Amino acid sequence: MNYSKSQKLKEPPKETCTLIVKEGIGEAQVTTIGSFENEFEIDNENYSLTWHVVPADKLKFEAVIGSDLLEQASISFTKEGVKFNKYENHEQHMQISAENLQEELDRHHVENRQIKKELETLIQDYKPEKTAATDVTLRIILKDEEPVCQPPRRLAFTERQEVNK
Image 1 (spheres, rainbow, N blue to C red):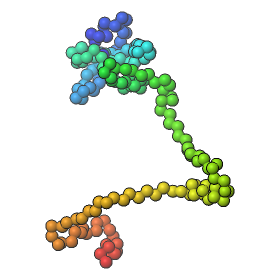
Image 2 (tube, rainbow, N blue to C red; image 1 turned 180 degrees about the vertical axis):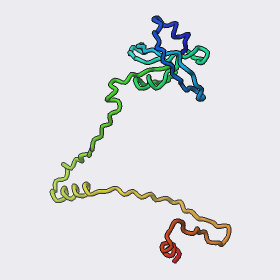
Image 3 (tube, rainbow, N blue to C red; image 1 turned 120 degrees about the vertical axis):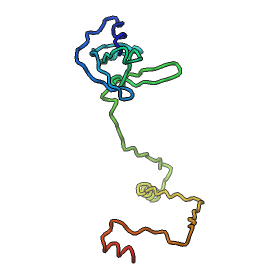
Image 4 (tube, one colour; image 1 turned 30 degrees about the horizontal axis):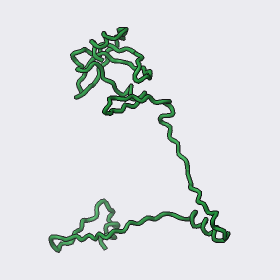
């Protein structure tokens, strides 16, 4: 946040005097004047951020938001404007759940027990082995009759002899 914007807040912040060198766009280095913690509301949701104050001439914008806010909410850009969606529960946001789902096939219409058993065995033992077949054929046309080869590399002498047989 630039200094002039920080002074316009309802309650001007009590800045800490810790000087931090920040790297910005184009790797330009800017030394902060200070920083402060502030709670604010966007789209009826409360957020808390640490704002780093920089000289007004070093930042064209009033404020720049970064990864601190993105840890609390996702940002969507639409025709209507910018929408902030706060994460409901930060711990649940990164959880991944996986289940081993097996579709149960309806085999009630098969009355013969022998056929039903064979059908179950076929389904359990089935392993998909998809092979793609195309009508495309390729042909390599050489410019001369010289064989295309390359001597084996990084092989031991005995292995090289085996390759050259």
